[in-house]
Length: 528
Image (cartoon, rainbow, N blue to C red; front, top):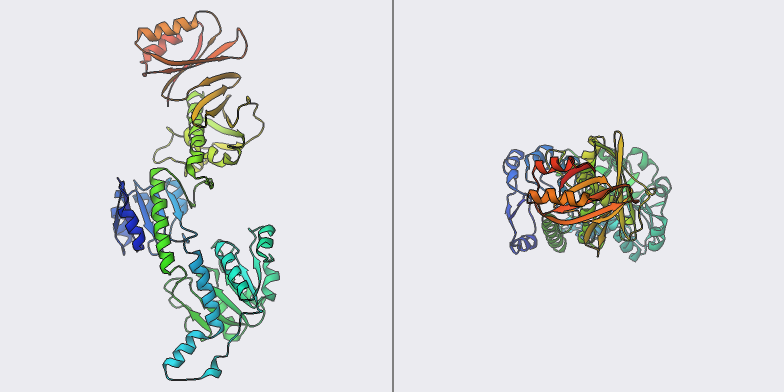
């Protein structure tokens, strides 16, 4: 039974979904102090938060059973993703659930600040009827600059166009092709700022974007520009914007987010030409419902190992087909890694991986992560999974590279890997028969079709008569049954390589006896 802790308020629809799940239980405990959270987190497999709970390195270290941290929303500023990655803890969010709500809030702010809606409302409440005080600006015909043309930015652009606005955008990570499809020209920031009447922010916080609205960028803007921010408060230098609002360089601003929340000693609070709302971007009934249900479904699927959606620290992307499509190939790659470390004559220092075939070429990052997990399976203390395997491998000095130069046999959707250690190297290649049955089909120059599972005796011997009989006799003497024997050689009279699947683990005496056979040159026992 999986145990899930919910430490911030979650929509009722999400709790109802959890109540229907038979292999998971949950506790909702909100308002916990850091000390209280650390005290109880060891009992849980997953943690669901919103923006209030701070999931720092201390909390993650205390979560000895923690496998997933889910942010019911987009921003993950309150989660130490790097610390989670080191501990193999998945971090996920719900980036699409509140897109429409945030886009609509952006338009609401834009309209309200343009037409003085809030102050006019207060004026009428006090008994005034001062229409001339609240002459506004219409959106039609104005130019909107969208900074960040991601999911929400695109929704805002579509809605602004419906109001008759001209829309341009700045986003260095979006292709010109997408801009053409949206009919939104992509400009450099220095070209966008001087020509727009409105600026709306829809980008994430990074070292490059923090305080991107500052004294320098504001000086490049058109006089009388209006700024909308329903994304992240830290995108704005509060003092610089306050000064621009006071001297008239910026006509007005509408803010739903703040550099610190709730805002304290913020120079923007109280300015007459600023419209404030308390981070309502995702606060619609529909968004709260969707974000809760999506988060619950994602958490449970991840705990079960069925699927991984919207993961922020997974070293590969799960495609549209879902995790179940790529998992068989990852299992094969992990097995290859286990075989490689079991057969290596020293610590592995370098890995080369190659994937040939329509089904696997696009999965190279997932295959590499699984391969590293297999290589490290008995070499690290603490949790090991696809999340932290690349980081732990790097810490151990293992380098990995994708290559196209491995000479491998011609199988459809073949995964090949060569590992190197001081003084040696080995090539292994594997395929999935029927899309599900793993087989090792190449070991260096040897060709064979071996089943990589259970107890495996890997043996090299001189290709001379009588060897098979001697090996069978020794195993029979110790009551060790052979399940399957696969042998390969690259020419008559050369050394042969055998993968012998056994029904039980043989005692050390069997291995000693095998090594004493004159024709046998190497014996290794692997447990998969």
